Amino acid sequence: TYIPANFDDAKEPQPVGGGRYNLQITEAVEVKSGANSKRPGSPQFRVSIGFPDEQNVPNMTQWISLPHEDDEAKSANFKLLLLKRFLVLFNIPVPRDGIDTDRLAMEMVGATANAEVNLSDPDDNGNVYNRLVVPRIREED
Image 1: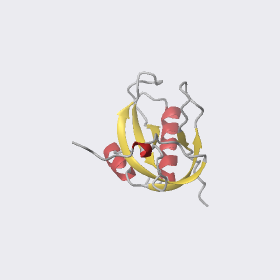
Image 2: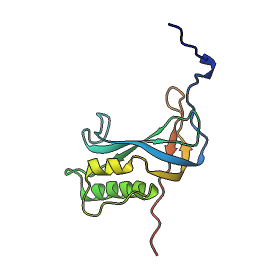
Image 3: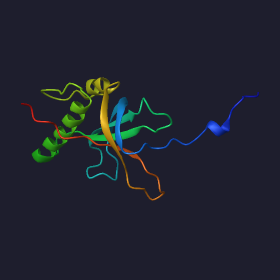
Image 4: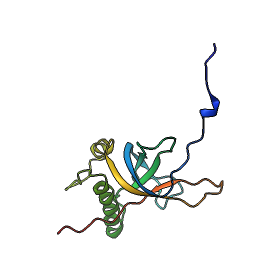
């Protein structure tokens, strides 16, 4: 079998420069934190965020920790605040009386935002990644 292909067009995706971009959530999954985390096995969302207007840019991964029964009150509240900031940024309704993780994950997928993105420091292999900047919530009037 012969498959025509131009290997010159097959290039590694590259991060975009820092700035504001249109973004879209392409996947949201509840997972457990890994062995290297402060509390292995804690619940969190792994959210994949794409750049619909950009070519050959890898998706960003955003990790959002969820409150856990073993959390101290201050820690649980901070996790809720970070989740709320993310939901507000993407115009996703903020739950009022609890988190149905399956439902919230479904509501996230497809949500869009125009948001600030910056670049990470190079890792041990010299790779640089895009990172979402999640702003504080503006106080209501």
